[in-house]
Amino acid sequence: MSVEVVFWSVVLARFALPLLIPLFPLPAIIACLLLDGVDQTIFQTFGYDPPFYQSYDKAMDVFYLSIAYLASLRNWTNPAAVKVSRFLFFFRQIGVVAFELSGVRLLLLLFPNTFEYFFIAYEGVRTRRNPLRYTFKFWVIVAAAIWIFVKLPQEYWIHIAQLDLTDTIRDVPWFLPTLVVAVLALLAVLYFFVRPRLSPADWSWRFRADPLPEGIDEASERAAYQAAHRKVLDATTLEKAFLIGLISIIFGEVLPGVEASSLQVFLAIAVFVVINAAIGLWASKRGYSWNSAAVSFGVVFATNVVLVILADVLLSRGPGQLHLVDALFFIFLFSILATLYDRYRPIADYRAAGADRAGAGR
Image 1 (cartoon, rainbow, N blue to C red):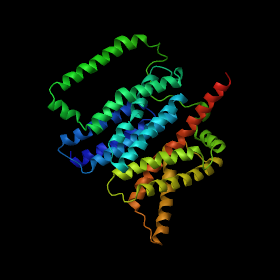
Image 2 (cartoon, helix red, strand yellow):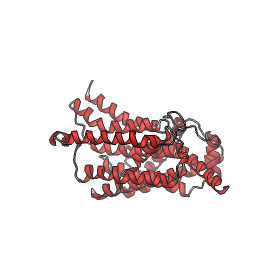
Image 3 (tube, rainbow, N blue to C red):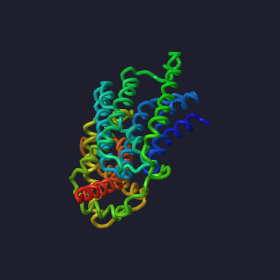
């Protein structure tokens, strides 16, 4: 097998696996996490050191975490947990953007990636128990525990001390035995002390995402909900602009060959978000919708390609210039995230509105 085949197989897997997170949240995100940890080992096994891969690695990390956040909008039945998830996700992305723009590694410690393990914790709970059992306070405590006891040490190890696990195991003889003992001790605590105190499970093991609420499980229902509750310029459009804009800045900073400034990337994405919001709202009010995510993506992508081509034609008549390859890459990324966001955000809003009504009725 050629090294090029190995390289592109890994890259394709790193882009394809995250797309399974909305349907199989826990197995898919763990698979993404594992692949992220072994991709370099795979390349080394074949004697290949792909140029610029560290940059692509960062970009793909951001991509799969973004899909995980969107999956939380689709799947999570506890609106309180969604609020915590939203904060943790955007908090981290702001820190990553600040780091990419400044190069100050301390920012990665101050803005730890708590979201990823919080997502895993929620989905771990959901495999056996109803997340609606647990209050906002519970989810905040879970997030705080992950933040303090897991992510801060990990972020310090990786980004401040800049230590490598493989090198440390090789160079420090006592490290691996200590690590094994610590893991076994943790497992023993979980099995002998935590497990017996857990409340009875609500259901057998669940690894597939739960069914969507009946009132919004069809594309036509989501379109009707958006037509009734959305405006072109509203909080949803703002969140989507920040979501895709921040991610695009990170991609623009880490990927080689991107010449646009961070501000240019963000403003361009914001313009596309607003235009897409206007088109989407127009389509929703006229009842246009597609149950197939692939068809929805195709429509969004084709629309944005046309917009990019028009922009290129207009700019070519003046002093401006549009780098089509960069633009099409960002439009591809934008279209994936925008499609999923537009499909999943109404579901989260629908659940939150139902929870508010239930709370008001008590």
